[in-house]
Image (cartoon, rainbow, N blue to C red; front, side, top):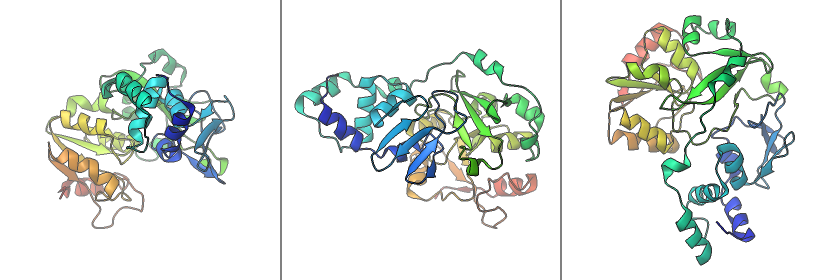
Length: 324
C-alpha cells in the first residue's frame, strides 16, 4: 500500500494508544508515562514506555517505537498494510482517506480471520523453564497436581511463574508470566507479562484442558488461577478470558461451543456496565448466559468467586442468575 505521511499521522492520532495497549499489556503509570516489560526481548526492568500526550511508545532497551501502526507491526506481528488496515478499522470512522488511499485500502483489506492469525511457536522454547513446586500458588489453595496439568513452571531468571498459552486449535502461541516479587509495584515490575506479541484475543486460557469437559455448560473466569482452583474442586469445564471485556472473536468462540455460558468474574466487575454488557448481550442471542454475583457480600473488593473457598464458590455458583 502506498500512503502519504499526512495520512499516517492522521491514523496514528485517531486511536488512543495507551487505551489500546492496556487491553493487552499490564501498564503501570510513572509520572506522565506508562511502563511495562517489552515482550520483544527479555526485560527484567520494564523498559517499554507509552506517552499519552504524544500518543507514542518507545522501548529504552531495544529502541522500537512509534504510533499505533508500528505497535500493530511489532507487537501483533502484522505487515505494514495489515497494520494500516486494522488501525483504520479501530479508528471507527475518524480517518478520512483520500480517493487514492481509499482505493489502496479497499484493494488490500484482509479478512478478519487473516488479520488475527497467531504465530505458532516451537514448544521446545518452553522446556528451559523449571518444573517443580509452586509454593506461592499452593498457599492460595491450588493443587500442585493441577498446576502440573496446566504445565505451570518457574522462570528463575525473571522470578516469575510461567504457563503456556494455546489457541483454540491447541497450537502453542505464547508464554505468560506472573511475578513472584511481593513488592512488584514498588519495583515498577508488571504483575503479568506476555513473553511474545499477543495479537487479537481470539482464544481462552485453559481451553486445551477444559475442552473435553465442556458439554452443556462452560464457566468463564477472568484468570487462570481461578480456573485451576475450580478444577481442583471438580469443576473441569472452566476457561479464562484473561480480562472482563470479551473481543468479538472470543464471543464467536463461545457461541461455537453451543452450550450455556456462566460468567464468574471478579467481584469488582459490573456485568451491566457498557463495556461488559455489550459482548454478553451479543452472546445471549445464541445461547443462555448466566452471571455469578456476590449478593450476600462474602467476597472482598476484588476477589474472584473462588477466593473464599469451595463452600462459598458452591453457593455462588448455585445462585447464578440468567442475564437480564
